[in-house]
Amino acid sequence: MPPISRRRFLKISLASAFSTALAGVGSFAYAHDFETTHVEVVKIELKLPRLAPAFDGYRLVQISDIHMGTGMTPHQLSRIVEMVNAEQPDAIALTGDYVTHGDIEPVLPLLREPLSQLTAKDGAFAILGNHDHWTDPDAIHGMLADSGINDLTNTVHTLTRGDSRLHLAGVDDYWEEKADVDAVIAQIEGDDCAVLLAHEPDFADVSAATGRFDLQISGHSHGGQVRLPIINRALQLPHFGIKYPMGQYQVGSMIQYTNRGVGTIAPAVRFNCRPEITVYTLRAARV
Image 1 (cartoon, one colour):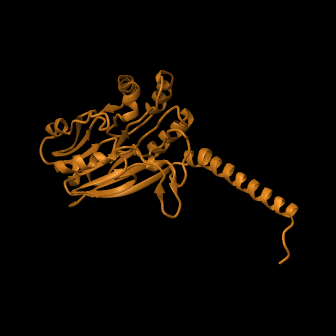
Image 2 (cartoon, rainbow, N blue to C red):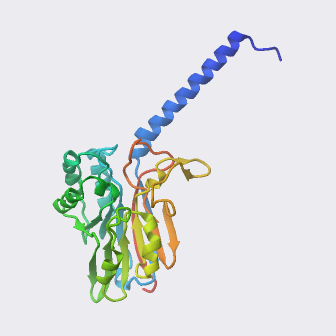
Image 3 (cartoon, rainbow, N blue to C red):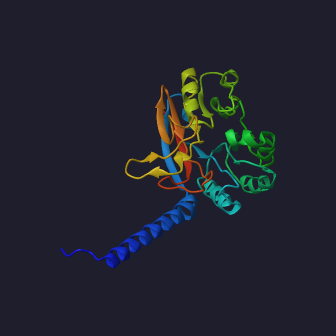
């Protein structure tokens, strides 16, 4: 094979560098403009031993980590709300981080208007996340109330079907040491099925140890936002989002599910980790 001339070598090197840069620009455009807006609806069925037959087939739809102001737009959130409503949920769960940082007053109306359009037979229920506490938790509580969303901060809402009950419970933020699981358990009467909303998924080690919850649903991790192909590993995960970063886990007798969230923190990109709406169909062990 004849040697490559210096001129030929420079041309090949320049072409290679240009191709690499072009691929990088294309990858960033995909991660920033395409994947962040292409929400995946994940549908799963979960058999819960303590779920009463009267609640068999109950549809609970979850969204998490909206992060309005860092990538999320009102138009995009409105589309997500439409997708949630299209699933005809019995109840809707929002598991925290509605904002990211800074002065959140300008973004509150951008959250309030779309979220007020959420529609479910038994209503929508919400807790706060760490970013909500790092900004203005009182303002977030007010925004949820103005949107007609039930606040489950360290409390319980009990649904009834005849003599049967299903408890929807929520804890405040674990990272900020606001979660009071003992106070929540004290509000749960009887031994009926209980579903817990907890922003940080690694709180599952605490909640599962109580033996009182059948299912914990969380967000917080965003699935890592960027996951390496083939090995499917996140580049980085947040504190208390490391053990159970994405999807379904069995923690003792309790199921833990971690939703990838619909928004992003900076940089506002996703790769191999699409935003997620989770649709849970709850099944009774005996019908």
